[in-house]
Structure formats: C-alpha cells, structure tokens
Image (cartoon, each protein chain N blue to C red):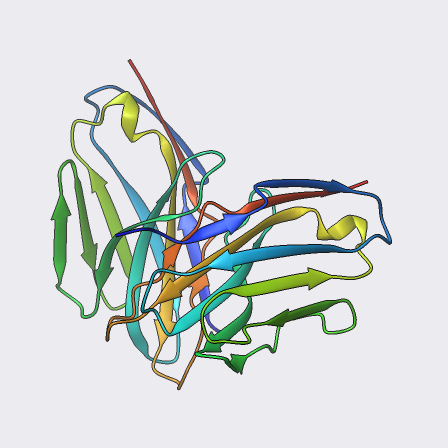
Length: 111
Length: 113
C-alpha cells in the first residue's frame, strides 16, 4: 500500500530561523511528488512537482528536494506569512492512480 | 484565469438529512476530482472524473454518496443520508492541458449535527 508520512506534525519557528520539513514515501513506483500549501479555511495551493531523485525546485524562500525515499521542503529565513500547513502528495506509476496525501506539517512562524 | 469554484462554502445539517455540493473546474480541464479532508488529515480522494466518465470511485461510500458530471464541465456531490462522521471539508480539484498538477477550490465545510 502506498504511504506518505510527514514530519514533524507541527513546527514553530522564529522569524528568520531556517528549517526543513520532511516527507517520506513508500510507493511501488513514483510518478511525481507534489507539495501544496494550505491556509486555514482554504483549499490547498500548488507549490512544486518533483519527478526524479536529485531534482530541486525553488520559489521565493522555499526549496523542495527529492531523493528515492523522501522529499524535503527547506524554508530559508521564514516570515510570519509563511505560516500554513504544508502537504506532500505522491502519484504512482500504476495507471490512473489518485494523489495520496500525507497529514501535513503545521508551520507557525513567530515575529 | 479563474480558479476552481465551489459552493456553498459552509453547510450545517442534521444527521440523516441530505446535502449537495457544486463544483465548477478551471475552464478546459478535463479531469475533475472530489476529495474529503477530515480535520487534521490530508485530503482523501472520493471520486475522479475524466470528462463525464468515472475513472476511480473506489473510495466513495456508494450507499450514501453520489456524484455526477453530466456535461463534462461542472459536477455535483451528494450525501444522502448524512452521518456525523461525514463532517469534513469537501474539496474539488481539476487538472488538464496535458499537465498532472491538480488545482483545488476553496472547499465546502460540512458540519453534521
């Protein structure tokens, strides 16, 4: 069974304190790994897609990386507006499989 | 480009009542998804449409949930009768244009009392 595990469940950072969120996955064959941001009361907002080990994507203070077993979302010098839940999801190679989501990491950045 | 639209945004009902949610995907997106997100969890797929055909409904509780996408554009998801455990956010997403990325709507927050 395909599984996605995100850690930590919650993370509290001071403004400017860089850190990383982890997404480990167990799938039969990875077709793509997706990162989303979700603000309270809103739907998930697409951030990145990663397809192969070694791939990296960047957007402002966020950088996503991928290995054969996990992905990291690095947050450099975060600001309070980066506070949100970050969701990781995978899609496998097996036909029309759905996205399988992790439970997310709740990030709070304190000024 | 307009995003995925959903209505209503909030709904409160009594158990055993029925409820319906509406979704209008991004223009031109052939694939439409309905997800259920329980508090503290990631979204879980309920049903996936490709145009007006069902691709995957393996996790849809078919004894009480139904969904349709008659003209291959907008879609409705219905629950009848609702149970307490159906309290959740119901998210609609769409993808298309040769890309796999799914774009989500704001969701409908359902509370069953």
